[in-house]
Length: 111
Image 1 (cartoon, rainbow, N blue to C red):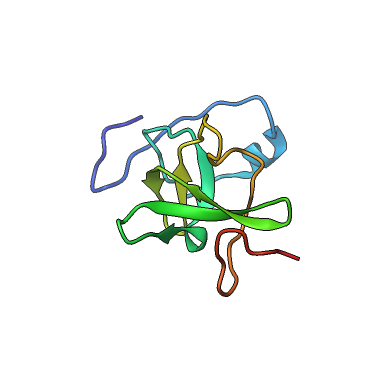
Image 2: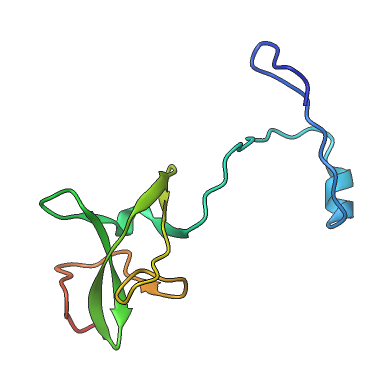
């Protein structure tokens, strides 16, 4: 990567997949990310805060709403990355997150 000049720099990328699409690109804007976060991508609209400021989401478990506390490690424009939990009751990959609804609470029947 070249040194930035007036907020612009050149970068060279290489790859071995999607070559036809890559070769068709002559000029493209890109956003370079210099950090990596590992976790579960959660829509920001699904995140709630309790009275103590702790973040949580509701998931569908056995046709009911279940509260899952989350630890947010990164926030994007319309999403956040939550740490994947190892303990019982933690948010895990594959959980069905409730993004919208009215009067969602722990144990509410979801039908």
